[in-house]
Length: 151
Length: 215
View (tube, each protein chain N blue to C red):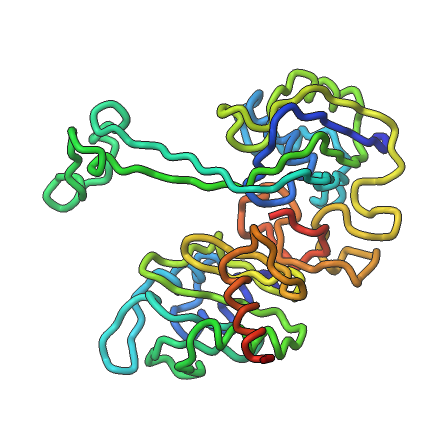
């Protein structure tokens, strides 16, 4: 199963019709308007989502059933997922005003190469190591949060 | 086909722009410049290929230094953009009015890259030494931002190698190899990566065993 089949099976199918090639359905899910729980609709323009096999957690309160909604901030949610790593393929996504491109969508399957997918880039880092000077921003933030929890 | 070790000696730092820079990708880009056809370029790469998987390693190097470098490009309304080529709104005008005097109306674009300083890069491949030599012989720059002077080649060395471009001496992957096709050391890094050309195409990705990523 590739990244897009994984995305569609665990997240995309709750948002858009699954037709055509998997990466096209993924692109539609990430760029189309979706009905929110409050009745209006919008794209995935803010918050975060963590997609795991059979379980997707998302911050934005959509009307879609089958998803879990969670108010935590992105760093709390991702840190918990990394600290309780279960070796299952996982998609870490952070949304912003511009749509998340499918070319920025990568699964994380190993803590030594965690990939946080955002509209502007994909931040890749080794979570088992301390961040160096050139470490991506999210690696530094997550390590700082982890060290704070330990104290 | 023959097992080879190919080394490039560099004069200037190199920019990869992400990815593994496998040797088949490097040859395919040289071939594309000559042939102008993506499919033909990929099928002409003189390296052993098994069910789409090229026997060519990722770039192997030891960086002396790694840092970021940025470039800013300013679009000039009058001499960079032909309005006829820009998508129009319902009224037939372009979406953003382009100013012709103030810099902020041109639209400055900044791109940042990871820059690697290293004296040499090595690849292991199973391929045709004569055809490979003829392709790389005149290649004087590799990587991204070549026109800005990055990745300048001093010389190429081709010698007999001991590895097939897929696995190292300890069974470690030398390039992204789909997990179900990898029979080496399974304690190595697993990543979601493109394993066959075109490497930019998201549909060519799979969970792979792969070397450590440089950036």
